[in-house]
Amino acid sequence: MASNVLVRDIMSKDVKTVRNDTSVKEVVALMNKYDKDAILVEQSGKPTGIITVKDVLIRAVEHGMPLNAIIARMVYTNPLVTIDELATVEEAAKLMKHWKIKHLPIVDKNGCLIGMINDRDIVYSVPSLMSTMEEFCRTK
Image 1 (tube, rainbow, N blue to C red):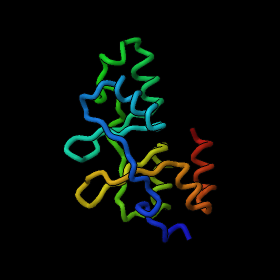
Image 2: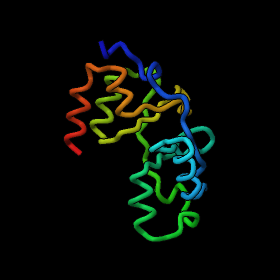
Image 3: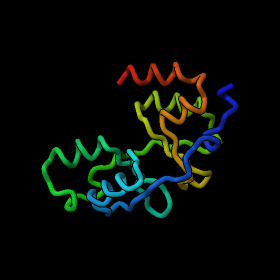
Image 4: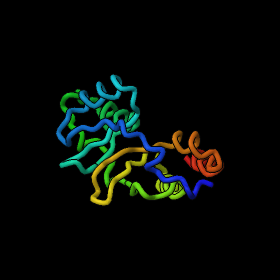
């Protein structure tokens, strides 16, 4: 049953992060190098925002500025929606559906980043939540 699976059990621990002052050019290079479609921005071990491919296209490329002249905090999505590591995958799916997000950072009790899940992780790990995620995809 989905309610018994915790987000920490399916999260990716290989989360790539950058600082607030990292150039978007560096962010894109990191996305390419590690084949990631989202990079977290953190300050002192705590996530402050997220940059997705869509953020780069809409908030950076569209304005025509050189990517090395734009820093992470200028394009990241903030406030950042996170979830506690002890939450269930079902709770995560509902949160993602509510906020219409595809990536959800996982934090420990101190608010420090420990992992991330995305919509595909949920569908592959807990197939019983596929209808919830399908409904989420249709609302976009």
